[in-house]
Length: 112
Image 1 (cartoon, helix red, strand yellow):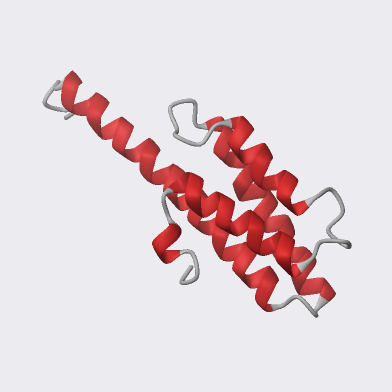
Image 2 (cartoon, one colour):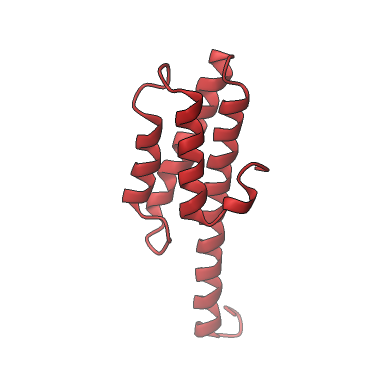
């Protein structure tokens, strides 16, 4: 589209790329939440996975054209709480399910 000077095609491609980046970030956040849940008894791994999930979920707010807003990302993070030493398995699942719903990934959330 760029070399053909197709501005409409270029804009459509940019929109597609932004949407896919959002799905990739949300999917990766869900993946790390699943890992935190699966490795809950290992403090080091659990804290690592929760920190990674935090980073990917926080990144969602920076896609100004995305379907997941800053308020949505904040809501998911609030489900985890402020202290990852005190997070429960139920908190992790609640955050994962909320993110999956907001990202349209409900059908694959347990596979990520």
